[in-house]
Image (cartoon, rainbow, N blue to C red):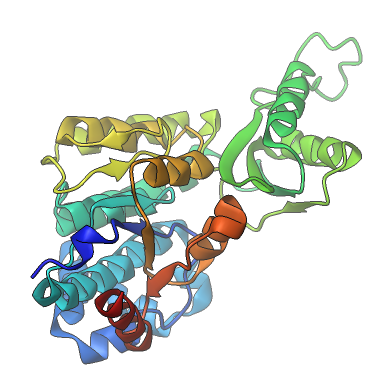
Length: 341
């Protein structure tokens, strides 16, 4: 009996870097064989005990980008497998998926585009390449709150046009390579945009955003300037890796961060995952796309509730309450809500 197909089109949402915490997923591991199998597969695919890092930390080890990315993918995939297993007897299935940055990999694993083993190895390398692309301290990101996204884009362009002369070069004949790179990286909600680029340029743009009326401009504690053109070396390395992996057509469409299109082929999925290394995460538009395509029930799958909060900001007073699955309690609540609706 397929009850939900007549009432709700479900979209699965998968979180990105920043949602991690030591101990995440442990409850699922302890209580569900399907989840336990995912953690074991991750350890085997990577050749070390990622599960131990996830469950025991320490936090500074989990926070390393090359650990964080496969860790969140692993927990998200475990949660998705448990959810799908619980919904199958009810005749309920996802119609769409989307993932925030790293989460786009989780979405494609859930859709069957990529095998989990291939994905977890790829995102570990993705994290490593991103970390290596820009020397520590030379890149930065900042969250701009309460300012029109278009104005933020214009300010970033102005900063990029104002090249920074090298010290001891008052005539401005030479410039620090990459010193003026800054652009919107994550368009998370109408009132929250994250900018990324060279540290000095990001700091300057953040200050100008405050002068232009932003409620806050907060420098973020990140290890690299993600989703900007400084990530080009990482993108090139990752493109070579992904070219060697098998990409199948997804079982359901996945919204692409960069192009804001529904991905329905394996070839398009590969291209989208390469493009997002330097491209902006257009999350507001992705959520609007899914709603326009008929998605009426959103489920955040994986650690935290960051995406649920952003969805509420995006949809405003019309927002449907987002469900989530990150442990057995939230799984039970979500399954009950879907069964009874």
